Image 1 (tube, rainbow, N blue to C red):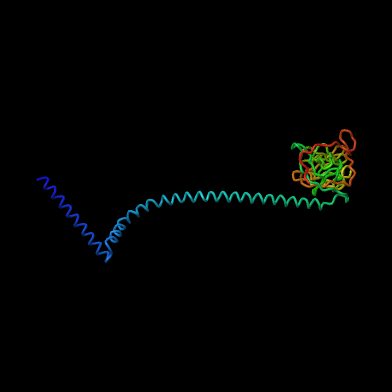
Image 2: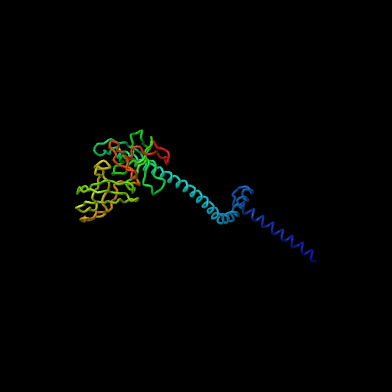
Length: 299
């Protein structure tokens, strides 16, 4: 009995399934309004798949958006790096242009500078400093072939820079007035009193006046008195007011007029007979020994 009943169940299930399929086909035919069965089945399959596709799209869209976002961030980073490099290049060009403009302005200023007493002068460019930061010297690209000799005064648009102390055919060394070996006879412009300014090895000068009868007041202008340097060249400005005491030397400090950290072009006064002397021998520095250039000469 069991096997026969089992076959009956299968037959019944098969019959019911066929009825269901027939019902679905009849329904599709009614909805299709004359379309073929293939078309209707395709549409039904699409209708059944749409919810699944929507779910997949809902799940996948954030992932795709995240990946696209990462790609966009990487692209923006590359673009930002390129823009930063371009900005740096343009800033460097601007600095070069500013430096060139400053150099042209300095050259124009030094060319417009009239030497004291209408004396002849030679324009030179500073191309090197001393080998040490403590060296109070500069090297210029003009030498004896340009009329430069030791002892000549060196000036810029601000005032006295120093004096030439060593010369070769095409270059020379300038010892700054900040060097302790350099002493400059000066006159206080508003009182006409004289004294001597000496370098201290830094950016401040020392003023000594032995016959002062009036105070040296802060801000007073000091000019060369014509003893060792051409007269009338600005040397510096009194830093501290000092009173004159009878029988005592007046001593104070002076700010140099020239800014030695910004020196580029200078003028050498070639029309003045140097009166400077070698501090050791006392002989005039007319034909000093040669020296070794610290760097390549600039034209």
